[in-house]
Length: 172
Image (tube, rainbow, N blue to C red; front, side, top):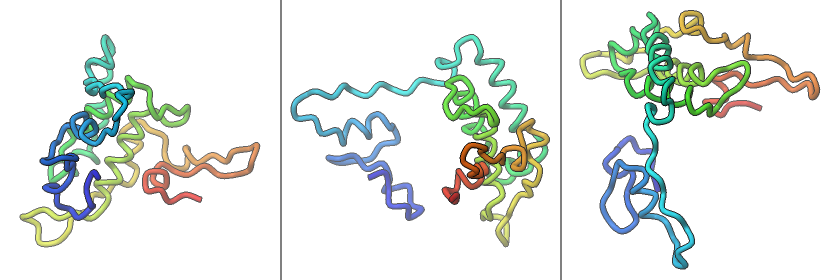
C-alpha cells in the first residue's frame, strides 16, 4: 500500500481511488473503510514546535549539536542532509516516544542516522560507493555506546539487543 520497495518513489503513497500524495493523513483517509461512519477523521500531525512548546529551542539546540558533530558532518556534506533528522530528534525528544532510561530519543534518532551513513551509498560524482566511518559516533554525540547499552536483564538472563540490532530487526 505504501509502496513496493522498488526504489521508485513515483509509485509510493498511491491513494485508494486514484493519484498519489505525500501527505500521510490524506493517504490514510483515502484507504479508510468506514461504511457505518464510526471512524473519526485523522488529525494532522503536529510539528516539533507544537509538540515542544517552550522547550523547542532547548531541544533544537541539543539536536543541532548532535548532528553537527564531526562524524555526522562528514556524512551530511556528501549526501545525507540532516535537516529532517534534526526535526525528528526534536520531535521525539519532546514527545517522549521511544524513551528508555539508558537511551534517550535523541540517541535513537542519531543512531539511525549513523547506521544510514555507515552503509554504502552512491553519489553521482563518485566513481565508487561511499561509506562514512561512524565508529565511536556516540562519544561526540553524548550518547551511550553499544557496550553501555548492552546490559543483561538479570531476572531472565536474556541480553538486550543493541540499537543497531533493534533498528535492523536482527535480534534474537
